[in-house]
View 1 (cartoon, helix red, strand yellow):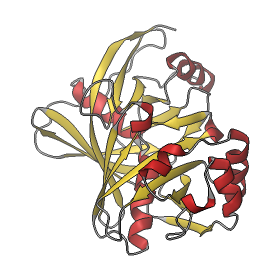
View 2 (cartoon, rainbow, N blue to C red; view 1 turned 90 degrees about the vertical axis):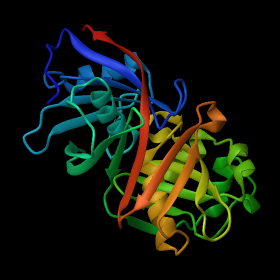
View 3 (cartoon, helix red, strand yellow; view 1 turned 135 degrees about the horizontal axis):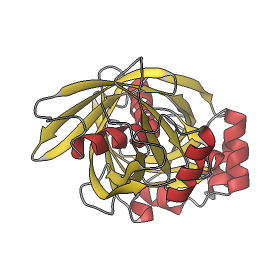
Length: 295
C-alpha cells in the first residue's frame, strides 16, 4: 500500500494528531517504507526526530500494514494510540491510500495484535476511528500516600471513587482521578517517586484526570510516562481508551466521552472515545512537515 523506499532515501514527515489547528495536538514523526531498517536504526531515527513517538510503516503479511513505534529515548511502544492513528492519517493525507470518501476499513499489525481502523472524509479533512483491545483491570492501588507524594499533591486531591488502578486496552496505565482540573494542573511529579509507584503497580504511565459528576461527557487529563523516557505527553490514545472503558465499567459512562489533554503544555488536544463495547478513539490530524530522510 505505502510504497517502499530504499533505506538511504525514506519518505518522512510530521503530523499533529488530535489537532484542529497546526502546532497543537500531539506531534508524531512518520517514516514510510521502513522494512529494511534495523531496530538500532529505528531507535536512532526516533532520537533524531526527538518527538514523543516516531512510527515506522512497513509491509505486513497479516494485515494491510505493520506499524512499529519508538520514543525519542529509544523505547518501543505498542497499543493503538496517537502513534497508530497519526500514521494512517499521514498516509491518507498524503494520498498514499487512494481516494477516501465514505468510510474505509483497514487492518493494522501493531504490538503483535491485528486491530481495525476506519478512515473517512468529512469537510475536506480525514478522520480516523480506531478500535482498541478489551479492557483489562488491575487491583485498586493500595498505597495512595506514595502516589500522591509522587505526584506532588495533597492526599485530599485524590478522589477515591473510582479507585486509582491500572487499566489496559493495549498498554497498562495507572488511572488516577483528581479533585478538579486545577488539581490536575498542579501535579508536579517526582520522576524517582513516580517510577517506583508505576513499577510496583506494573504500569507503564500515569494518567491523572478530572471529571464532573457521575455522568461525565468530558474529562481533563495529563499523562506522565517516565518509564519510556516520556515525561509528559500531549495526547495519549492508549490512556484515553482505558479511561473511558474503566469509567463505563464503574457505571460512570454510558457511551462516549471527550478528553482534553495537553493544555498545560500549550498543545491542547481533544480525544474522542466511544464504546461499542470496546473503546474506539477518534480524531483528525494536520500534516505540518514533509520531506526526505537520508541515512
